[in-house]
Amino acid sequence: MSDCIFCRIVAGEIPSRQVYTDDAAVAILDLAPFKRGHTLVIPRQHVVDALADADVLAAVAPAVRATGRLLVDRLGASGLNIVSNVGEDAGQSVFHLHVHLIPRYADDAGFAAMVERAPGEGDLDAVHAALTD
Image 1: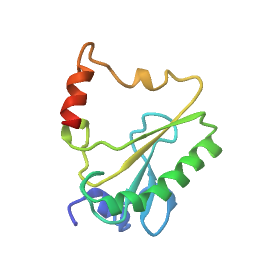
Image 2: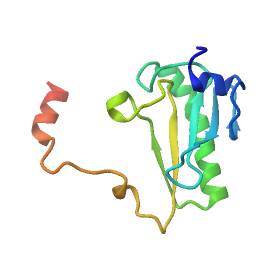
Image 3: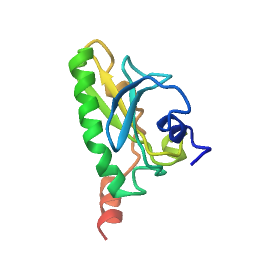
């Protein structure tokens, strides 16, 4: 897809700082990192998001694991957030599947500082019923 920035990165038309590649995916450093080492794993095949194609999602799993190990082992991260936003309301801004790998360190505020919870939102019984009925 010629207008997709991630397709153009995968094709080598736009420079990137690649940290891992395999037949299914490319992992690049995020240009606006949330934490040191924030990396994006991008499938070589254009797929809109993580729900669009189970085969592509499965194909990038080894790259997610290998890149995650690389970030933990080489950067000394003590944890890792693995996130893929699906849809604009979830924060997806590039509509080509990508998985954020965000290294976490003992001295940062942790995941709770990244996420705001809405008090009282999401009655568990109602959500459970909606998902199981």
